[in-house]
Image (tube, rainbow, N blue to C red; front, side, top):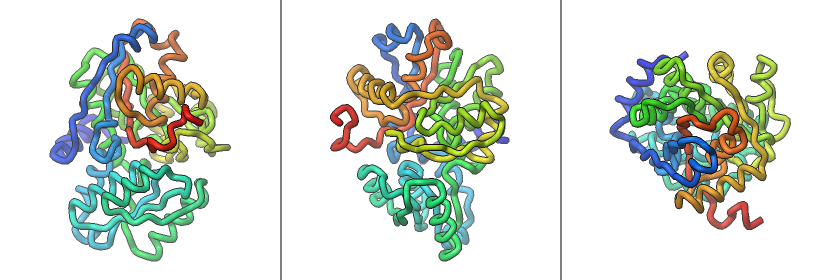
Length: 314
């Protein structure tokens, strides 16, 4: 399990390659939530999401021989783009297995950063099969999007920066899918401040983390029919024990609430966020019994949105 010191070392390692993204506040949303909200804006991050943190931390620890072999991963878009950016900067090549229903903006982002896309069907079985075939056929080195300690440490640097800027937070909340961001947040925040509470927010339509937490064992997604294309992955075997042991709760959110909260952030904060990170604010607004009168840090995980397919126009 990653430690606070390992996450601090990861931050020193990746600092020259990432943005220390701003923390924004909004009095209107404070009033609505009855809390003090602090938004860590990873939608302003390089490649458009927090994923560049973990990808860079992992890639910088590969050998020259590994880079020469090439790197491969599976991704719904943001990790693929971030990994491609990190690998291309070091002269390597990246193959990215992606579902064939990925939004166009995320496809373009992967290609623009030098990644080669291999398509799969939009389900975990197809994704795993396609990735396994790429690794076997090419000899590429796997950099998993979340089930990797280097990735988890890199993602944990998001909460490091947030807690450095806002040291008296009562609660942190992040989206959860495979669990890299939530796992890294838990490893850093709970060691930094033993009194802080940490929650994950997850779509009801892809609620494997929530059900896994209830049962104590990893459960498969019964559906991934969610607008949160970045939150359709299966919780990881490395990330789940961290979440099980440390998280204060996973909060499932409906599609309707995700979309309305995404629109609210656009309208009130004047920033572009994708559905996968609007879910964190939706969880706060739907659970005032947990968050009211608290200082709450929310990680806005990314801003890669297809502007021709905005959900409130459907």
